[in-house]
Image 1: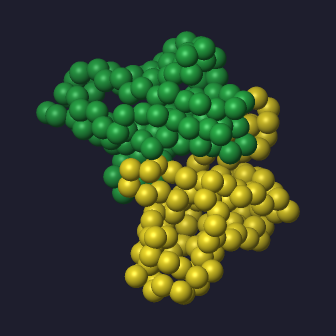
Image 2: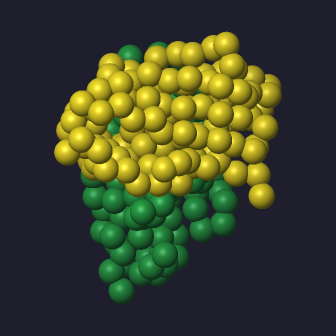
Length: 107
Length: 118
């Protein structure tokens, strides 16, 4: 089967950097992805890592280590609008999501 | 704009009633999915479909059924609703061509339907 573990909540200060970790167990790895969901909204795709290393998209970066079954999402220069839930996900034909990490940002 | 739409957006019903949630998309995607979201449990896959003749069960299909009426339409039914089916339901689509071509199976979500079963 497939399962993912990520912290339920993380708190950081505006302007700072925060890292949200994700460990996974899966049979047949197709890559690790990240989604963002604001309160009352739908999840939206942020990033995808198929290979080891760091992928950068603006203030957001995502890292993958396939040997450790581990990845993280790094958010830099935090803004209040980054307050949201973040989900890691794995899968090929069907995607399995983690339970989500609620990011609280303090002014 | 190409989009994923869900109707209704909110629904309150009573235990034992049959409910249908509808999803339509104009993205031209072949793959469609239904997810359920509960607080603290993330998104769980109910059913998914790769084309009109292909329906697959997800993690939590018991108590649900689906119908893929056309490439653009995928509906979810609760045959006899019960209170623990109270949740936020999302429809999503993805592009078969991109996914099988080595790209990522990115999910495009609709706005969600908030269902309450009393």
